[in-house]
Amino acid sequence: EQGFFEDNWEWDTRLGRWFERTVDDQAPPRQAAGFAYDSGRDVFVLFGGNANSGRAEGDLWEWDARTNVWTEQFPVGPA
Image 1 (cartoon, rainbow, N blue to C red):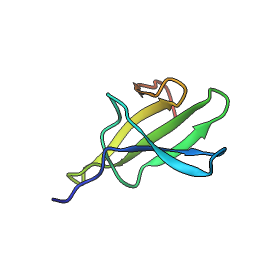
Image 2: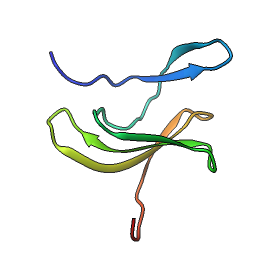
Image 3: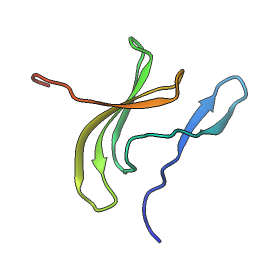
């Protein structure tokens, strides 16, 4: 079966290794998305990418590593 994984990984700078973070609700799996860290708000931001179906996504999600929660965002106004 082909498809994208629905896993979340976090780098531990103290231990120098990756570990998997289990979350209940998360952004749908995708490839070729934009992903960045917003240091002003201390969250990770995920935008767009391609779904398993190949459809281009235009959604925006934030992940808060402190609470381990993904939240879909619905921005308004010009980009």
